[in-house]
Image (cartoon, rainbow, N blue to C red):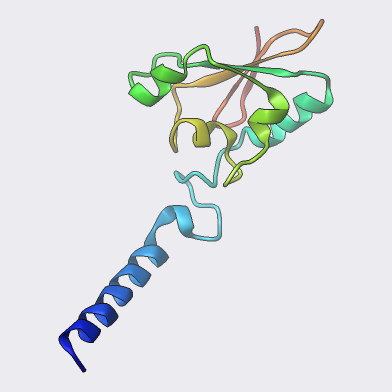
Amino acid sequence: MTTQSNYSTWLKKIVKVALLQHPYLKKEAQPGNRRQDLSRPILENLLQQGYDTVTWDSGTSVCPICRELHNQKWSLADFLTGLLHDAPIAEKSHPNDKSCFVIIQGPGLQSIRVDYDGNMEYL
């Protein structure tokens, strides 16, 4: 084997091991990764009830990603589509985002705040 071939084989093995151990790429939901955000079933239910707008609330977060999202708006349907993982809030910000919330609104409906863990609070 040539040195180039040895290097290529070695590199492929390292990349394979790294990918298999990366939490974002594991098939099952793991606490603390983007695949686990408990807000989706709540948001889907609210969409069926007629809610249609999502507004980001960064709360007390000091994270630059979260602060940049503060007060941004989406349609609820758009917020729930095109996700890579079952984690609408985490995909917009980061895993384990416990400081941020989304405010869900709809015509003639009381606003609701939903967090990463799927907790709801009427406003």
